[in-house]
Image 1 (cartoon, rainbow, N blue to C red):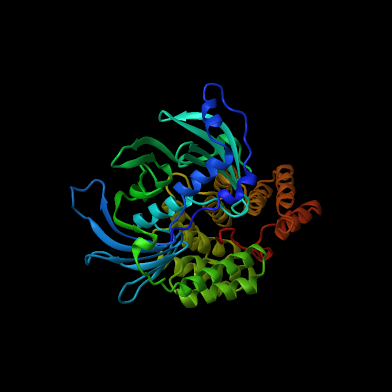
Image 2 (image 1 turned 135 degrees about the vertical axis):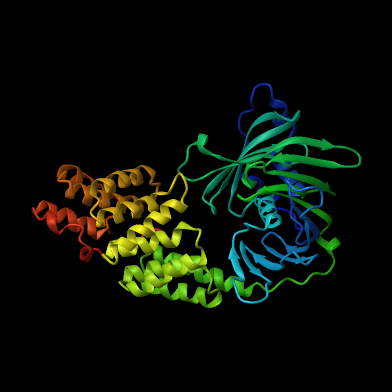
Length: 480
């Protein structure tokens, strides 16, 4: 049976706000409880579905390059797909983790739906057109007109995800017409648009809503079709960074219509996900032994997992196990030679510990080259630190100042960059500026012992000891 959403059970969380002048009819025509029931019906997931999915490049001639799959899903996060022609690859997915059915040596696991546009489209559909998350709260606002239809603005407070979703909901059908998300700490003007309806067709024979979907990349689009009372994905355009693909769902069967289905075994994916999450949590809590053990557990499931190699390398570096750290980062270079990650972290290890400084600089330069026109703060920081270790002090200062400007909200990463720039300024005898930066670094990360040591040496008049390789015991801030 189709599983209805839980909107109706949570109508006590709905609160009406003031109606906007000129659009008050939307507020008057629908009560919070009524809207909740309509949303429950229009966006209530079936417990399972099956479909034939056709994927083809948008720029290709009709039918050229198309690949079809038979997809079965236990909503919202478990998928199994089988190719219907020899060019496709089948597999199983659970919460973004994929186990591919490939023959011979090579990676069989991956994370994220890049390269699988139909999975990305379904992920976005289930993420937006969904039941109200448990523990969340929906607050109704002003009535509006959208596509010549009466609608209601609403804010969904999702405490579990720690974010707000700003919605415009069709008053008649309960379907979301527009959605954006606001991350914690961001102002209203910084919300990220997800989808916005551009066409709403309801006729005797067909009912469809077409959306612009920037969440699916440049030119992203979605089309929902009504099947009974449920609005379900029927078509999408997904741009994965390389090219755009059109995804069409045909022969869709929802709930009992899909017939008997066997839930795929996702226990291996669950073990992999659990190990990676434990490793990440241990890194955040600076429990290096536990992080290394969990990362090795993940690599026991998936030896090709870049994230696990990175977490192992980071934990090993913090424990002073330079050989294991270098091996982990070098493995990333072999697995992902076009990514800056392995080059960046191996360069940092060499530069920070004083190993093979010319090699550190060439690795850092390679990471910069692979980062394009806007390298992130971590890559800039590594390059600046490698320049400093190689005696190119003024160049190091310029690059590290760029790193400070590019640094985001992570206080640990900001603190480490400020420490590096402070050391460089000491070498340039700009001691007052260095003292200020080191103090700020300690404020941001009280556990950054290197900054405390440097500031202490500076206050005792011993700046010559600051920033030497032996003084460093910490590591790179890019362990995600």
